[in-house]
Length: 238
Ligand SMILES: C[S@@+](CC[C@H](N)C(=O)[O-])C[C@H]1O[C@@H](n2cnc3c(N)ncnc32)[C@H](O)[C@@H]1O
Image (cartoon, rainbow, N blue to C red; front, side):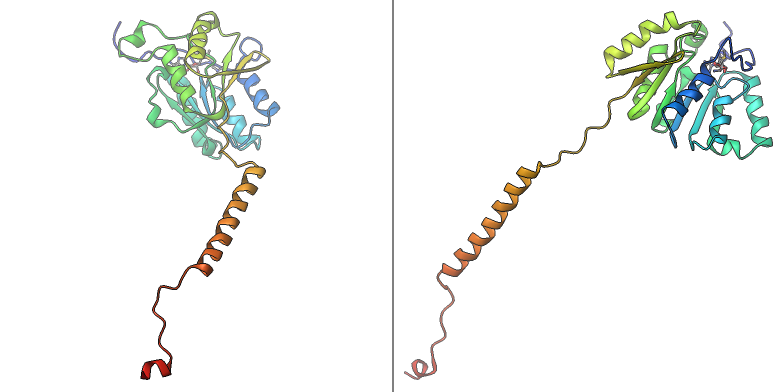
């Protein structure tokens, strides 16, 4: 172990048949009508299809993608230079997902963890990187109420991801939603609505208020005057 960053030493092109997760994800977003959302995406690939199509398809979705591949990141730089409109709403960054810092992430509507457990080894331990469970928990906690997290059932390490997902479900309130194609979906509970008075309660409260006001008026009328009465002219002379 040389202690250097555990990079992804490949440059992954789009394989529609062998690895359709990113395409299924785009279909999922369209199917659920997800628009103007903030999306965190693990594993951009060299194709950058999630960020690129989201910027082009009118959904208004903003994508933050991570890649641990220098070659894939180079392709992002090329994309940014050649097609600046795309990277207005699509930011990719180079790094190890196991070193995410919650303080640097925005609140999210959707997070993908398609490649959870695929690449983490003792090489990540060497520099104190997070575990798979810790990174999943961090991203779950960044989800807004009602936000969604997606896993890829056909991932080469889905069997290793299963106990991590199960553990996270023990720790957090994760609502399973129906699978979409190859994707497993969980939803965060929606925010609790602010407590609203029932109409009956509101009416009763309004009546009490009116009553109290009326009572106060009557009381004020019957209250004895405390201020001394000015003596009338004749009285004054006496
Ligand atoms: C097999 S490729 C899949 C890319 C794309 N999601 C797709 O299905 O076409 C794996 C992706 O995971 C990314 N990756 C691997 N290890 C990573 C890590 N530690 N942190 C962030 N991304 C990582 C790679 O950079 C690459 O984009």
